[in-house]
Amino acid sequence: MTIEAVIGGNTKHVTFAEVEYSICKHEGTCTIGIDPAEIDNFDPFDTLKINADGSEIFNGYVDKVTLKDSPYSLQVTGNSALLKADRTFFKDEYISAGESTQYWEEHFLDLADISNYDIEGPGTVYATHSWSIQTCMDALVNIIEIDNTRLYPDRHGKVCIKSLATDNPVLTFSKYSNVERVVSNGTIRNRAVVFGNLVTADIQESNSYLVDGEVCTVAISTSLIETQEEATRLANAMLAEFRAPLDVQKYTVDGYPEISLNDFVVAPYGSGAVTSLKHDYDGENYTTDITIGERCPSFFGIALITPPLFLSTIGQGVWRSEDNGLSWKDISGTTLASTTVPAIHSDTTYLWAITANNIYRSPDKNGTWELCSIQPTYNATKFGENFTISKTNLHLYDITTKNGFTYCVAQDESIKRIVVLASSDSFNFSYIYLV
Image 1: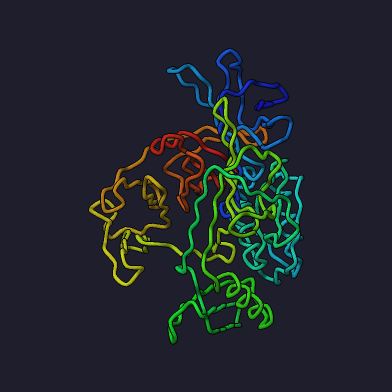
Image 2: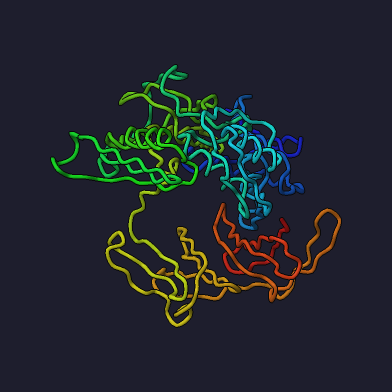
């Protein structure tokens, strides 16, 4: 097996490679090791392609480059074209006049400078719905919620917005080195409620997997729904998604560089569309993990979150719940007590919180807060124009983490520009991007 990377048009020998795709996360990422003899200068957003025996398994962009001393090596992290959508913020308001979902999906992909895409958008975005001060990725996810379509990158660099495949097998396999299977009824729902714009659909059905009389509800509120017909259609789609037990299967097989997300496969314990994919190459062996059956509630704007839950408030800090919201504990400490917290975000390491002017992180997610570093001033250039951004003029609005970076969206109240502060070490917000 031969694995090679082409970075900025130059072919490099690869010492190891990990390529991962996820429909639920709308992601395609990779990490590769470059032979020290071929260390060169790489820049973010250089094109990055990975080939396995001549078959393309990744096509995207350089996201981060890490030089390690022991052992001396260079690691390159890549991301799919959706990286552009995730990092393109817009402040202008866009208002629908009743166009199709495909029209608006193409609009936000074009806005993010993504031209290679394949869209199947069957719905309509009703008049007066608007988007502003968010990323193109946020806008795209907002639209696919009502279509029950999937947003994901394929291995050739194309961004796809399609329904989950239900037929036409691309691959049938019976040999595997490892299998994991999880069957659960934890996500089963027999009642769906849709709150639209002045319309409501409430549909309940019997379900043999639940105890007689038991009602488990899934609900969504969206201004994208304006007719009873659309509200009913969405409620039925939600019930179809959640009426059966979860059956997730993961198989480890040799190779298969030709497989892609959303390919329909026939597997030993059932068939389905590929929802996650991972290629692993350690310098000698090349294996692929193929996962089918994952259920991603976020397609409807729903997150079936497991405790703990976190809540930000106006004037009352941050709270935590261990019992799905039945009771809450104030975890503001002295740092955020009686404080307005516009946004919080929990990742695998920290609970993040922002006030109007400061960024905090909590390593225990239970009341201990550390003040992160924001520079007094930043220098930035946009379209040839130089700007000096002062911390005293910034008003913070939102915070999130992605691929090892932490991002905070803010507005400079002096020049009326949206900016994004970024940190690569989860503490020092050393970078700034003008929107």
